[in-house]
Length: 266
Image 1 (cartoon, helix red, strand yellow):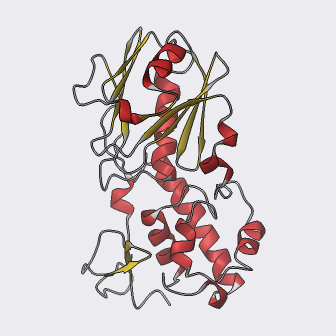
Image 2 (cartoon, rainbow, N blue to C red; image 1 turned 60 degrees about the vertical axis):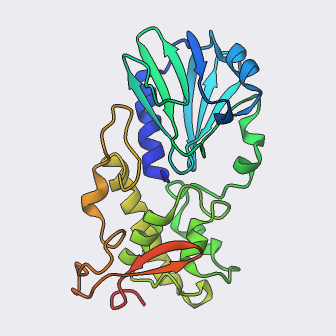
């Protein structure tokens, strides 16, 4: 699933290609991709509108329209956008502009498109935790004070911290030397401060390198993200740790595959 750096990359690409442009038409090839309103109303309301602003909240994209409504997009597991001079035959929804086509592709139909009046009142937005790049180290450490969960599943909980998923949680914990199964109450403030620095650094470098392509992620021109070569543990089962040469382990934690080094993470 695209995480914060990948969605931020898409946001910046959308700003480059469609900001302040008019949507001349909409082709809905898969009605199930439209969550609200119904497909016919979605098409009628959005055609003729221009894109005023594009925001990101966690893993969600919010496009502000001249109609004062908002196109809210959650890519979920396999969604992506492409920008081209022609429509993509595999696209679920196609937005027509005067100079190209914005194709919404989603092979497994997990993605969600919504046209609503108040995006901030959307339940999944209201429940989101803070943005990891916008809080202070003190605020970050304080967030853990009353928690009893294991550290990695907690980092991935969107109501706790917005935008962090499996990949960046694993990489952040390796960087900080914290075992993914450790209970939060056993982690010191010093270690949490180190984790804060690691997450901020990793996310910033990942954004600079236009995200990580380990599944279906690509940018609007179909290029893969460049952060894959920076990965230290994610997807490296049985490969030697870059620090101590111990083989990287993979376990299932919170229903997700979790990668870590048993020697470097405690």
